[in-house]
Length: 211
Image (tube, rainbow, N blue to C red; front, top):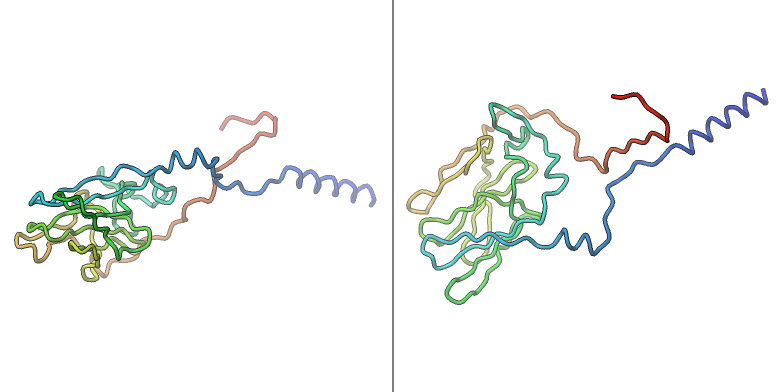
């Protein structure tokens, strides 16, 4: 009995010695992190009248959550089955109007937290912009005027299954035509979220079979 307990103790101790907590993603030293996270150059979008432009600032890099979005492939097209959005596409997180005559700047406010803005389009009269905002519940249509105040356009959810802009201004600049999601579509299957760390495998200095 004593020998069995001693053997059991050795097995538990060995298992505890080799057991390792789940490895999570680690942050590099601050100087290196600051270099990688340095602000990216903004993208200019000039108004039709050439009197002002919009500076759209992208993030330095796509996040792990961005790259881990669910994705379906159909006839050369890739899309997120839950939001009908285009996955792994560059987006913008900050918008600023700039008057070309004097350089005066007006930041666009009222956006959701950590916005993912795409498909920016000026109205034909150069008085407003429209753009999409990718949210967990789908892609929303937003608009902002020269005062910098942004607001959502209705409660519609856009359909970005196909590449390209999902909306267009009408010639008078008063409204849009857009591709919308069918309200009564069944929900997409749930998938796991992004991992909290990398997959780590160790051989413990022992030879292993080829897999």
